[in-house]
Length: 247
Image (cartoon, rainbow, N blue to C red; front, side):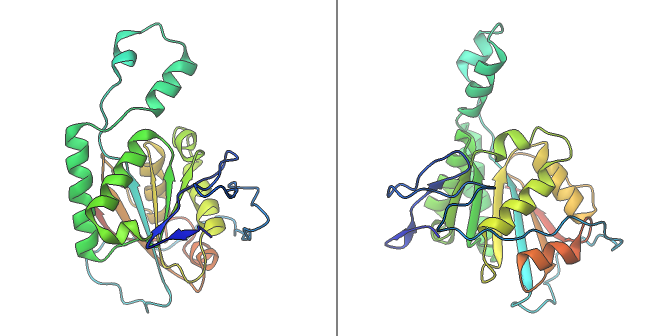
């Protein structure tokens, strides 16, 4: 668990041997620390359920409802170095892209999306976020603007940045991360990351064609006494797509 300081969690950087800001080791994604209990993840299975897209309130009991927010980061601006040096090695482009900050429009969108999610009552208790600069900045603005987001447990996941560029791998990767880092009493989880992976994962989970532009959030629901059970019961295509929220 994250160490709390006042009403705010200490950020943990995980997956790359990082540490919490208080100095404690942070758990890695697939090699948990001794203080972190790994959870057994069910394999993804294909569901024949018809995807449902609805803005009506869920009829599921609150104790069984599992809510998943897949949020793409807000719009960023291109690095001056990236646009000027077209001969830059691929490794340098990777790191330069990773460090791009938000644009002015992106910062405004982050404020807007946090207001909308808070008004709708979709406030996560656990946030798993890419460690890219534009994703972390999106989260920071949301936390500053909406108190509910500042009270969530937060883990920065280095694996979320590269996995989003790998075809067909993001959905299973997110499932494993959620089942490892969440607990049964946590009912709402938000995963923050990048396209094309986030758009692909939302489509795979819901069975619908989901488009996620910058700072768009897909709101998904399933049921289960645990996150493992929710994923096992929904399988592929069985998550209820409640809505796609835009700034």
